[in-house]
Amino acid sequence: MKFKVLSFLIVLVSIFALSCCKDNEVIVEKPIEIIKRDTVIVRDTIIVTQRDTVYIEKEDPISDKVDFDYNRHFRNNILVGEKVTFQITEITDKDYNENVIYKVKTLGYDATKHQVFGEDFTLQNKNGGAVDNNFEIKDKNNISPLYFIPKKPGTYDLEVSLQKYDVSKKENVGEPVIKYIAFFAVKITFDFPTKLKKKRPVKDDYLMSFMFSIDDGERFKDNYLSNEKSTKSYTFRTEYEGEKISESENEDFVINKMFAFKKNPVEFTHDKVWDKDFDEAKTKELEKHPKTVNITVIQNFKDGKKNIIEYKNVNIY
Image (cartoon, rainbow, N blue to C red):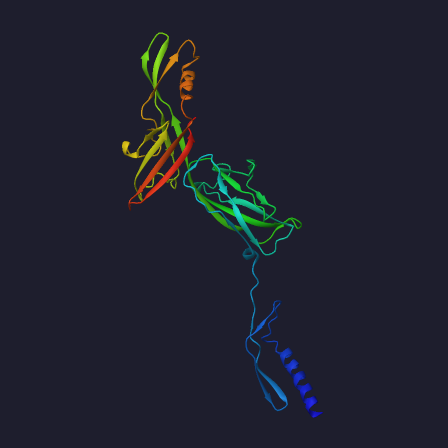
């Protein structure tokens, strides 16, 4: 009987001792891990010499729960007006449900980085429709690509945010996740200057050259094809109408300077009777030739390495 009473007192005193230690008490919602406990029994009294040491796992913030990955495949031969694919490959979300959508938006207004939406670039969906810089993903397991359309030549350094949104509550959830996309866009311009070869009463003979130039942008960071710090020189080669112009046959490539992509000018006749005007005769001759050309720019670095940039099947008219 004495042993049972003593056991009861021990348990009672233990509970009382643990419940009275308010000074170091930690209240947690998550399971706790007990690291150390020292107890000493002195006769009929329990003395707790050290409280339980508790480590609490910090709750993950919402921003840590939502993340996304995207296809980082980089193209170095982008032309103004072409589509630059931004494909989100996966969205990680621990609390995903049917009320959740994700809003994708471009950030930044830095004109030197070509971040100004509508002025430097536009957006399109997979059907070619314009997107007003507020692309929505309604199913994280079925994500459509988003396309950037550069409007100007230059070095694009863009920020893209993904914001979790609760449709039922009509409010954002947590902070947006921000990723980056960078690419270079150039503008290739073609010109077909003509020179009078022979003038006659009814028909005039002309020579037409086939020329191109490339612009890499006008802002101080737009030096993709004009980087003097790391580059020794730029050269080029072309393929057009079965002809190949080697880089060794030409002077070094320079931005905004006209170069021939066909070796010899083409002769054509302006019939003053049958052709309405000179431009019509020129257009008729031009339509006899292929509509596209391949242009390759070779960046020769100072350390001996090369960056080969191929612009294939570029429309010349």
